[in-house]
Structure formats: C-alpha cells, structure tokens
Length: 540
Image (cartoon, rainbow, N blue to C red; front, side, top):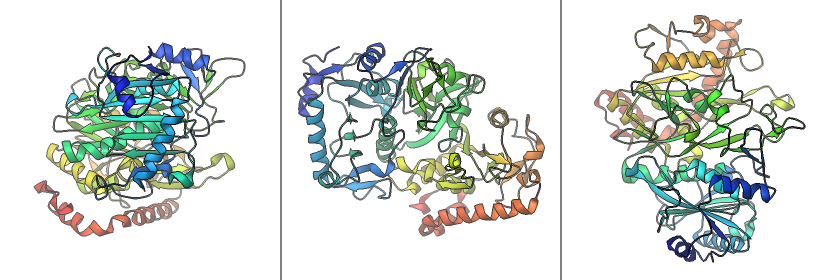
C-alpha cells in the first residue's frame, strides 16, 4: 500500500524524505510483481523469485565503516573490519542517499524488528530502492503484529540504495560502495551494492555491539536447533562448514541457521528467516532447504537450465556464493517462537582441507576458548584455475567481520556460560581425511550427520576417548554410524609421516594467528588455571 500520512511518514520526514513515492509494507506477492514488472527478476518453476545482485555477489568487509564519535570511540575494536569514518562524511553520504531515493519513481519502506525474544526486541525501519531488497527484509527480519502495523518511532533505520555510487574523495570511503553504521544516529547506510546479505550482517553487527553491554546477551554467529526433549544445540562455523545444512535436521526443530543471542533465559534467533547457500543444492542431501525454495523465497545469482525456469544449482558461473532467503515459516520442523533453552551441546564446525583434524573431538574449556578465538577453517581458493593448495582461514569468534568489540569480550562471556551451565563443547571437521584436498577424501555428509546425531542424542557420553598426539584433542574410539578407521586422522593417511608434516604446518598457522592475542596470554592462563571457580575476571 502507499504510505499513509501518519507516523511512518512523519518519521521519514525527519530524514528529509518527501514520501511521495513510498510504498509501505507491501506483501511478498506485491513485491514479486513489482520486481518482475521492473524487469529485475523472474520466477523459477517452483514460484520463487530469482534475481541477480549485480557487481557484488557477496559482502565487501573492507568497505564497512563505523562512524567514529564519542559514542563508540573507546569501545569499538578498530581493525580491518571495523573501519572508522568521520561523522561529517556520514552526514554527506546520508544527504546524497536521501536525495537519490527522492529521485526514484518508487521506494519501499518496511517496519520490522530483530530478536525473537521480546525482551530484546529492536525495531528497524528498512528503506529500500529495490522491491527485491524489501522482500529480503520481509524474509529475514520479524514483522510487527498484523504485518501492516506501524512503528511510530523505530529504534534504527536501514537505508539501502544499490544504484548510488559515492565519490570516495568526498565521502571518505575506499570506493563507490559502502556500508556505514552510525551508533549515535542509529542509521545504517548501504550504498553501491545490491548484495542483500549486507543488510542482515549489519543488523548482526549492531546487535553484537548493543546486547553484551546493555543486556548481558552474547551474540553468536551460529545455527541452533532443539531436540524432541527440548535440548538445544549450537552450531558455530564459518561459511561453507555446514551450519545451515547440519542444523536443518528433520529429527530436530530449527531455531535458526545463522545468528543468535544467548541470554540468562536461553537462546533466541536474531532473525526471522534463513539465508542459505545453494551451490550444489540437492533435494536428496538437503531436502528442507530445497523445499523452502517456493513462492516468497528470494534466490540470488543462480542460472537456469537451458530453455527452462529450473535452477541449475551446480552452476557457479556468476558466483560460488549463490543464496536463497526465505522466512522461517518455510521450514516445517521449527520452533514456534524461534527460541530455545540453555544449550546442552555446542559444536564448532570446521572444514579442514589439510586433512589433519579428527572428524569429531570433545573440547575442554581451555580448548573451547582457544578454538573460539581462532575461528578456524580451511578454504580452497581458485580451484577453477587449478590452484589446489588449501588456505588456512581464521576469523575470531567464527565471525570477526561482525564483531565490533574486542574478541575477548565475547570469549569471556562464552567461557562464563560454558562453565555456568556445564555445556559440552565439540569440534566437528566436515573437511578431508586420508590426505589433504586433492589427495584425500571429503568426509561424507552422511558421516557428519551421524556424528552430530551421536552428539545431540548423547551417544558419545559414555564412550571411551583417547588423546590424539598432535593437538591433544580427545577423540572417541567409537561413534555410531561412523567408520572407526577415520576417527584418528593419522591412521587414515597412507603415509603417516606426510600427515605429521602437514600437521606441523597447520599448528604453525594456529600459533601465528593466536599471536595476535599474546597480550592476554598470561591472564588467559591464569583464568584457565582457575576454571573450576567459574571466574573470568582475569581476562578483564
């Protein structure tokens, strides 16, 4: 519907938007028709909207900025992901963005909120140049009651203008695109990029700044699900490690696939939808995600089989990072309120392309904090050009680009919660065994599912563990549904000495990465020596 002359219009007037070309709270069906009529997308054969996001098919973390003002200057961990920008540059960019949107024939406004737990709800008004962006906001955030209910004074605004290119010399940016967050004005600008994932990760970023300080809530880059008995499991991991795939389990109710908060009461989803990778997606391997691609879903940067509207999920011609967003309601087996209890099990997922780490290991509290701070996985960069060397990738807290505070802030909170609630922490390697990438084999998805099922169903609680000699990880001698020959990685290599050499190299990568935390090593050791006292004050 066209925006009425009411509270939302007054709110837009405060931003100097005239409101004459605004459409408010359109339904998904209306947004799909708008996108098609503007020749910006098409329907696939299951009724989902398929679009291309243009130049950017993924996030641009080097182009994310936080306005450097008195509100944040002493709290933000300024680094390559949290880049400072002067307030006057933000003000200039805001004026440019508003003027740009005022010149559009149509803009789209949606009132939403983040956080499933009403105690931590954050209302957000999303202002979009494109109807497909508005559909993404509908899918990924929560709608107010009745959908058309107006929020008179939202906590935050997100303004998306993919068609606007900034002048870096005048805007203080690196290039024409930028995501700029102002905590004092409570506005997020996303300009020059049509990649919708910038919206969800911007919301994640502000929640990771606000909730730890004011609500004692730990923000986590993880998936979560719940068993029939109400037990909650968390799945941490970087992109490509299996968070969405392994958490979307027909035998357990999905809480969410990517972003959650952990409060005194339990776990709650930050989002109202899922944003799943769909490269090589198949109905056989991931039936829940496959079936979620239906009317209302938004598919990005895929191609069709020739002469059809059937998506070719195996085609990476546009990008490996093909995506689909859909509301949680598209998943039949989900928790009704997108919330869960205190976690019983926590799983760190890693895709170790070096073939060194065991498929499953149980972590002590010191090990849990160590691997949480490192946030390790390994990627294969540029294999289409014949590059076969694995590349070690480290991202603190399994989500460094979205963590505005120092990683130790989040590690302290996590350690306190693990100790307080006696949470079991596991590491599951979904990568290679019997050799590194190009030499060994990928751990089958059915094996990873069997490992996860054994963990969450308590089938590893009473088995014997042995300590592998390289990383001193506790590895079960038996896991239901898993070939015991692959549980000890060294034994799965034809050449044990080659394994030892590869393991030493990986240890070297870990040591070099962890060196960035050298200034807290002594206090970390002090804490770990007192871990039974459940005190993390030594890390302050």
